[in-house]
Length: 265
Image 1: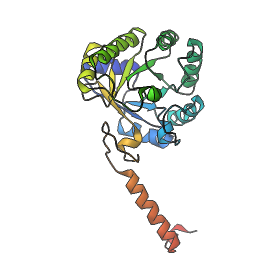
Image 2: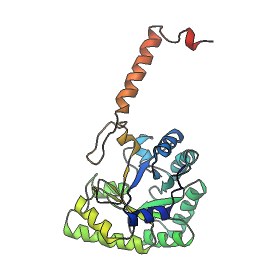
Image 3: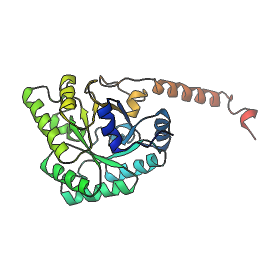
Image 4: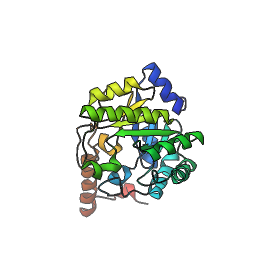
């Protein structure tokens, strides 16, 4: 097994120009597959709401739901850095609540937590968590928990004013002690400028090739999603393959072709 990935690994790789590869995962078999493939960072994202639980957005996802999936993923990996999303309202209400909820995720196996935005309470919580030994990954640009505030899934940072706000937010999370930052749905040239302006490793999703690494949702790159997205690339069409396999199973049972003597005792 390769050397264990840590928060320091990502910072070292940025300095060396080595790309960081991250993916979401929500269960034990997926975690093992990602680990075997050499994925560096596995995020138990609140995207579990869209991909696994049937929610339209990440907003309904609870801390207990993230904990449930986190424990399953934790049991499947050894090398990858395991990061857990802090779901909607598990942070940002008060510093004390944020620390308590982050502690639950760490006790369940997370090696770092991720939270969105750079509000004053979020920044204060970041500082306190880092002081207590909880590594924090920031998330800027399009932040899915604010989808209703944005009015949908929209690219951020298109105007000069918005770009300046993102630069200020990036400086703020760096000063608050974050060890890395996800940049989501922002113009590629802006993401590259942000990457060059910070010591933090930047991990992009829909932010172009200029980031220090990339993260994608499990279901999107494996062709399991019903929709396709501009910022993603399906590397296989598992939705079609699984559908065909299930249809064959249905047909063989109905036509009395399965089970045969080979599958019987």
